[in-house]
Image (tube, rainbow, N blue to C red; front, top):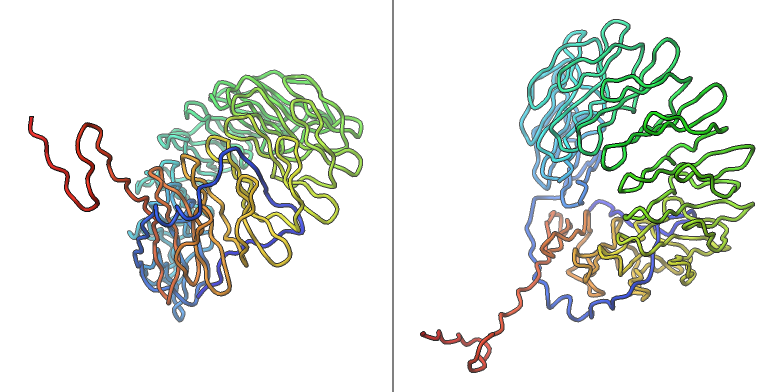
Length: 527
């Protein structure tokens, strides 16, 4: 049996959370309200070279060695053998329903999509194939002789000397990629080549959320500029890597740029004030697109610029920590003061700690609550709405998790050798391990589930009640919209898809009549 993915307590920071308003479901109700269904998928493979899970964790693809051959085993079903399976594949579509990988065969390479072999080529572009966000389309780069082209939905595109960065629009209807002919570089959008430049900046090609607009960085005459909807912006000495971003409504665009020895942010074509640095990964729009914020540095101090106004100065701003609430009215980020860290919420500093976990600052879906993980001495704790929770030896990777309505929260933690999950401020049962990816809330927020280990056995816990034992829990658990809980598990050498299906509540009579005894069929009333 393969080693399961176990959560270990961190000596460094990991995401966290705590507390809520609604009481957890009584443990005794969980087992009674679900029916467990096990579907055997096939034998657990041996000689595994690599493992890939779908985003929801409900599908798994193993790359397996068989002598001098390699094959992909998808959800327990073995595919054909090849000379090799290329690194970086298989890849799942975002919805997990489709899978593709690159295989080597007799000196050639080919892409296998949903079990169907594509044509053989002299090479397949690294980082491809790529699925569209809706999973309906797939594209990859291929080489024939000394020419490269994009294969989109099985159709070969025009040939170029080189290609790269294949990107689908969020809706999947449009596709763009970088291409080159001779010493010129350009972007091909929906099959049409754009203007030529000395270079296209890698990683800058981006669609607006509605798919109607496209932008990228380009090099021209020793300068760099942003091309937006085919129109060139002003030239600068550099474009900040990873900074080109559209607002969620697609109407606005911003990026960081270098001018001489200074850096600035360009918003809707207008250059902002100059600073010594603009923080990488800090430029963000509010969800409604009306507000914008970023981190900047001037004279040894760092601060957040919100809607053009400089905030208080600090010794550091947490990279990637800037967050707007869903309604755009609130803003939070982490800041360093001397040797301590704090969270700044709506301009107000929270309590100081030895550290704030990177990537652990979360705003609830309703925007009313804020939680983060902090370190105090050798202990870790969760702070929610400014209130510090209990101190533990560590916080487990995978949290914090807000329920969809923002009223409940859960996270994994531990003391000594034991691991447990805290739900709405209440510590659950002790276990030897917690599976990566949990805990998770049901869509209505009433249920919470996670994978756990006790001794040599693994199981999924729903509302404090342990489910059936397995040799391992591989992927999930995840709730579907109807409340069904699904995950992958292994037992006695077999891979299973396990579902906990909500029991149907008996329908109660709504009109006048006699109470029905259990097992009896109510009489039909003639009218």
